[in-house]
Image (cartoon, rainbow, N blue to C red):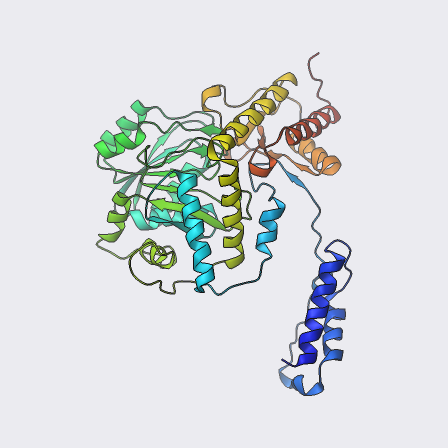
Length: 440
């Protein structure tokens, strides 16, 4: 690159930084013209017109993106703090540079803190929570093996689907959304089906439940079964102790309480789970999700790190800052904040004369609250009102609860009394606008 071209790039970047994203009007076309005018012609390659593109560049790409500020009070993603967004914009490093592997080591320690585990095989999957779910299935099951899936919402449904797609057998314990499993039900399922793995959702975002985990790990060990727990919509907002609760595989997501962009999924394997992976009679079906390879890339074994895939550098930066923020707040304080803010939301909803889906207060997930839609009210009209007038997101139901509930999320950066008051104001006005009359 010539000095003139390099200087033009630097000057343009500086102009953009100074003007700010909201006010800069520099289009891609004008930027390109500026670069060409600053560079010498000998650095512009000749174009063979016979091989020129025949499809024109889309007009939309010559204009800035439209990204209005919104308050994301749905089940996720939640809003990211400025420091997390700032981390995403830091300069790229190579995915095996020592400075980046140091950041990976810090992320690993942050996940161990968030999960309350000392497991060596602790790292982040390059993908969303679904990727971690797929990784758990691919690594811990071999063809024909049986998994017991506790299904009280869509995440149990999806886990069972993944089990069957991997050539294994999914036996189900099923409850309606809004209910949780008892130890007696779980033990009966373990006795009956004799699975090598059992799956349960800790924070069921579709049904709004927080599954009590005490005693489940001990039951799984009693019946020689690995325990897999999905805590995507609960980790950081609900007490969680991977080692004490004898969980064998635990995963979460970056975009909920951690307040980082979607795209990285913390996961951890116990020594029992690790042994199952290392002693498989067949290779893990997915190379990308092979925990043997991922653990090495993340520095979880004694060998030198090998190239496995190009890690999402900027997303790892953001995940690191989300974990750092959680550590600074402290887990106990974060759990207390989510409990207090969710209770503030529940009280406000009940004052409007509405009912919560989960009746038992002890098993409500503070991170996601489903609210029953009253007779004669169109849920989407209320959600649209909140978005149009307040830029506040309120989501609808999934699966069998589609059209029957609203879901309001209270997570991470949005877990503040001010945000609760704002969402309640938008929600109540939307109800009145749709003809609902709150009780006096």
